[in-house]
Image (cartoon, rainbow, N blue to C red; front, side, top):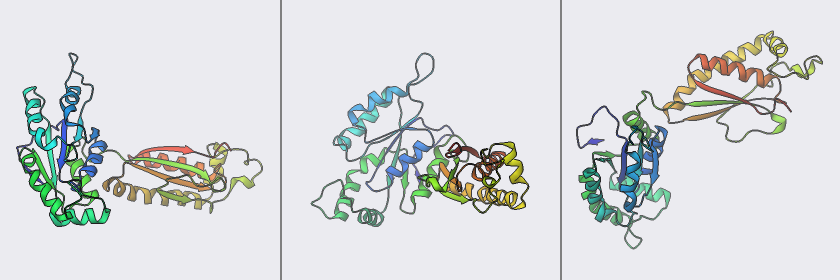
Length: 298
């Protein structure tokens, strides 16, 4: 990462993302969304000044948009010819965007395009490496006016996101990881998009107790029944310890939302009690946790 100008502690509220095709601009946009920026991909250059006015505070000191990140690149047909002049116009209106230029080595860009099998946007008649080099030469004037130049040659999607979050997020540690625990019954099918699944069908089943069958895992009688078994409490403790270990790594790798299934046979007793207890334990540990009992009332 190369800095072009002296940076300040204050994060810019208006960012323009540009650079070479295949250099990671889409991944950068996702990172800016995660830290609260309103993001627009491939904004027409003729709309830049109009959009920028949304960031200007009104008489009460509030702006329509608090902070924004715009992706403008060579796909925009007026980009190379008009972009420098548009930036100057904004400066005269005291609207100074922070321009980030993304780039990578020819070899890395060539590999990325070969892996995705996407055509290079500068044209289809040239070879891929010729197209990459032509774009690099054409983008040189844009690169010269950038406030920050980021070479992504050695970055993965995850390391690039982490670097941008650390640089542009006002909250230390990055955006929060939101965890949802979903209790459910296997006989009704698995929920979609679970990241982790814990099966608790090995625990004693209140269903076989006639006086408990019609109650749910939120009822004190069910909780009291299950708490009598050492294996129930040990299972909860082990799940908690594992999650307290794993969740920081999911956050570190850029996960902002994690869905964890807790499953028993019918989703009414054991999974509900375990999910509620895990929610309370993880909240005590400082995690943002919610719970959804999908099948509890079935």
